[in-house]
Length: 239
Image (cartoon, rainbow, N blue to C red):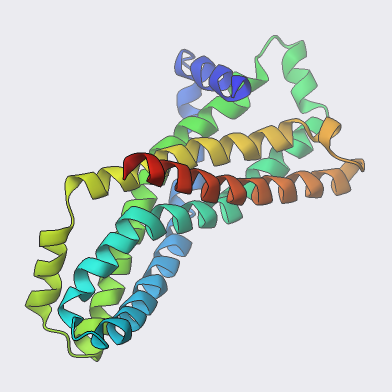
């Protein structure tokens, strides 16, 4: 946490961080949008299909819209979005910083009196904090749309009942819960991925490319565990 807070504060008070932030907004936000939307679409379709057949046992098909929307907005949206971004962008961050550590580029920054945390880590944290809530919103909207296609167009649930169920059940506290989770996940997962790459020379048991691959693997595994752990903690706190 000291590592992350130092990098974040340093980047916020450095003028030359803006270009780096824009670059990482593209890498974390724009490049991850297709996979997030694709996973959100099929997640929503599966929820619509499974939810319909489960609710039909209790003659409650009209609750499909609210059940899918709440599941996506409160839980599945932030969690699956974070996991997808970690798989694509997080592993790349860990590997890139690990290569920079092994090739002594980080030592060169220190020699030139440039703080590596401010230059390399801080802009990535800012970009992740900005990108994760937007990507989560995309996931939620695409997922609800996928559930609409499955439930309404394919299985015959009334369109008005589906939409009104979402309007009546989803409140600001549900949306704020998802946003809070996405912000926390964005900060923590980016911090873990950057830290693992930054400490490649210490954490890895093998030199060179092997050590970088170990750092990238640890970054993804630790991030996924942290996502699930903090999802439970935040949910317990907000309920």
